[in-house]
Amino acid sequence: MGRFRYRMQNILNIKEKLEVQAKNEFAAASMELAQEQEVLAQMLAHNKELEEESRRLRLKESLSIKDIEDNTLSKEIQKDKMKQQALRIHAAERKVEQKKKVMVDLMKERKTHEILKERAFEQFLLDEKAEESKQIDQLTSYTYGRD
Image (cartoon, rainbow, N blue to C red; front, top):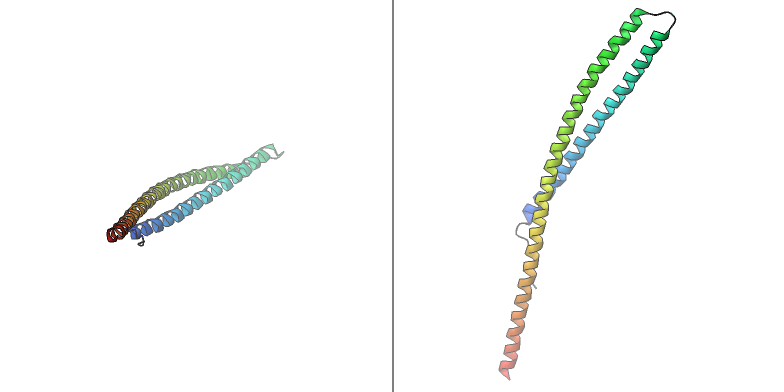
């Protein structure tokens, strides 16, 4: 029996390496998105603290206009930061989607090449079986031809 050799094995190896690289890039983009979401969660917590401080300042017996104005300004600044963070999250989500699309496409290409390899192996087995059958027929006809 001959040895099976897939003639496009190099391409399959490259596709596998590209897929691994795409998976790593997707994982990195996902981690970046998670970090951006964590930053937003911290900002929301800080915003909640500012709101609570605002309520406390307004409920005090002696109102301090300066403290209330500082708190209001802090809340506005925090709101602007949260808007910027939401934009960063949106950009990170787009990046994750892009990396996911690339990864899925590469997975499809690799799977296609694996299917082609399986079909080539099946054809190889059929050819080997046919060759073996031919050799058996030749031996049989030689053996019966000598008698």
